[in-house]
Image (cartoon, rainbow, N blue to C red):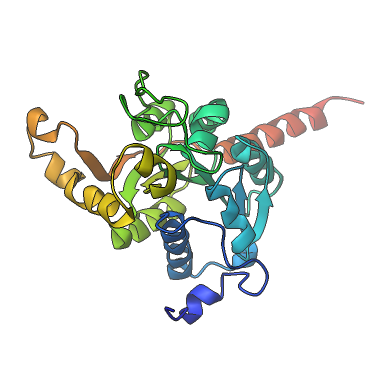
Length: 281
């Protein structure tokens, strides 16, 4: 058994909630490790962090991590996270979600959180299906892919998560894979440091459901596919559309400066309260 490094152990509820429930070969634990390393590298006090989740495989993270945590309803992680941030803007709020949680039942919440540019970091673990409930198709399931609810092949196009949230107004949008873990550590750190709504889409294998249904091999084979079928933003910029077809592009895909929502809300409250104080009694 691999030794647990001291700094990782510091952030786990190791004596309470382990062993974890994730399937062998699932990449969610790798993403959780990246979040820990990113936070540790920033030197943040864990009492200043609020980790929020909805429902699904990824949503187990707040159970295992020793921050302030909320394990909420399906698709509602960002609704709760928004309330937390407005009530206490000093907290560093992180929402962890799966692709179904974030983009199906939570689809309205995430596009409006991006539009408002509220200072929340969203980590979306995309394994292309609803893994916890048996492998049903999600909004990111690729065309022609087989799932429990598309046994003859998916006929809907999947969302491009990063393009969607960039268009909705997010300040920072990046994509990583669990194979490129050091790169993912850095992207999550950049997202945490960014003022405004930031997003990291972390592509992860689900060998138990999605991989088995599509005969993609075991977890190692699925990780190798991520290695062989992805390119960095820098490399992608030098490729022709034909060369780039079907490739996953990793790295920072959008970054911009924009007013942050809780700052605007505080300014509004101060203006309104100031006008109220000027009204003769």
